[in-house]
Length: 400
View 1 (cartoon, one colour):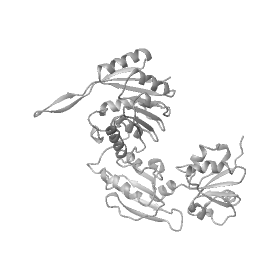
View 2 (tube, rainbow, N blue to C red):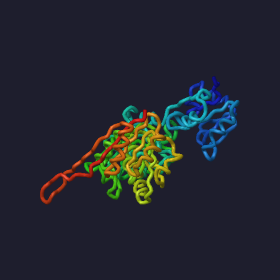
View 3 (spheres, rainbow, N blue to C red):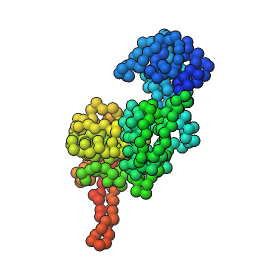
View 4 (cartoon, one colour):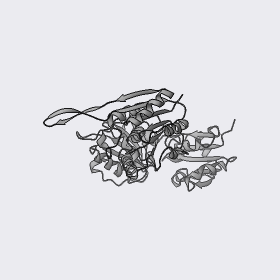
């Protein structure tokens, strides 16, 4: 079994004085210390060789591997395994070769300052990531703790809140927690105007106005929340489709014929870190899908210009596949071959020709074949009547 040679140490604003004695001894005995300028400043006067984060940052792993055989310490902020560099290193270097030394995280410190139970809040990071990712978590009475990406981030989040009818939400920026320069800035989203330090943590107590947009993470968002050209998987059918696709943490969806991206967006909203690739040959629809992804908090939606099945080759193997357009036996066979074990495939059809393909595939492969018919109440003159949507034939199965 490999012996630990790499120590990843969490450090706070109180520097070496805040470390456990054993952890402090590890830092003081190191031959090499790797970290950012702030980490080096916090770690005081030690005799080790100082090394800055490499540029590009992806070179970090190879740099660390080249140091094996020496006493190496990597300094991180707070808990190295909570939205920090420790997790990234642990995916590339055998964890048996690493010893982690956690410190209080920014989330723990912020929760203590706010008097919030960590079990009852959402902990998010937009540090070095698209700020729009937090939009999916804006919901009535939600409490959010957010690692920001700079001094401008709280203002951007205040704008997101205000645009969605959450302008009265309380916001608190906490900076330099645990150190002599600790600072706190309080306000509300609709009038936020503070200038805050670059390195900060944001606490948001979401308060909804009576007309606020309700954007639950449960699938089935209203159709008018999406930009679309009329050709889309409608709300009721979309909810049923996502129920069969089963969004799961970190899972990948292929959305074939993604159109305005409604299924892919709701898949990504439905589970933390869920990913989606949308394949769509029309540029106007890809543009709508990209806009919907930004507006609804899934900016990492990947969009591909291509036609199936050719566009599927070379993509990462999916955990789920939705065929909403371009259905054919060839497309099914390519997607089914790529689908991972326990993967879910759902195909929807509205034409008789596509339905015939699904009926034949169902006969060969089994699964569940259903007809979904939806009618919505709409005005008929001065009265109200039922207006049917096009019926949808849906085939779903799990790869065993």
